[in-house]
Image 1: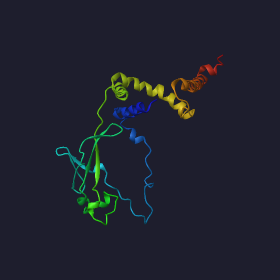
Image 2: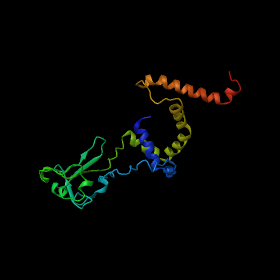
Image 3: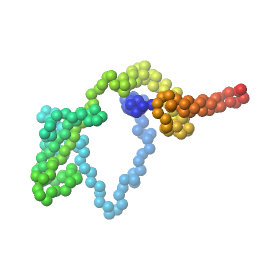
Image 4: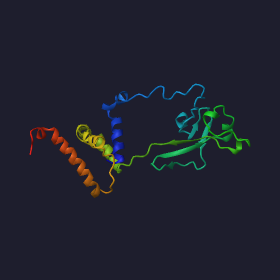
Length: 211
C-alpha cells in the first residue's frame, strides 16, 4: 500500500458521513500532562499565520495588532516542494519595533542599534494545491468517491483490512527488507501462506482432521 493511497483513504473517511462520530471514540489526552509545575513561567504562545487576516482586494495581510503586512519585493506566487502555491508578506521593521504585542510575535530581541537593523514579521499564506486530474492519487480519490467506489470500500473494511491488520500486528510484518516486486513476492507469499493456514486451522477442516 503506497503513501498516496493511504492519504486517499484517510481523506475519504473525513468526507464520508459514516465516520462523523469517530472523534468521540478516540482516547482523550490527560488534562494534567500539559500543566506546568508551580513557580514556572507560563509558556508564551506566539501568533501563527491563522491569527493574521488576509485581504484579497489589495493583497495584503493584517496582524493581530492591526499593522499591515505587504508582499515581499518579488511579490509573485511561489510553489512549495509539495506543490502548494504560497505568498510571503512582510511588516515594516519600525511597526514591529514599537508594537506592544512584539513578545507574542517575534522571538528575536530588540536590537541595540535600532529598529532599522531588524526585519519585521513575516507570514506565509498557502493556497490550495491545484488538482491534477491525471495524478494517480486524484484518480484514486475520484474512484473511491464514486457510488461504485463507496460500495467496494465498504466491503474492503470487512474483507481486506482485517487481513492487513493480522499480518502487520499479529504476525509483525511491519516492513519488507527487499526491494522490487519480484523479490518482495517471496516473503509476502510466505506471510499469506501462514495467514491461510491459520484460517484453515480455525475452520471445520482443522476440527475434523482434514487430510
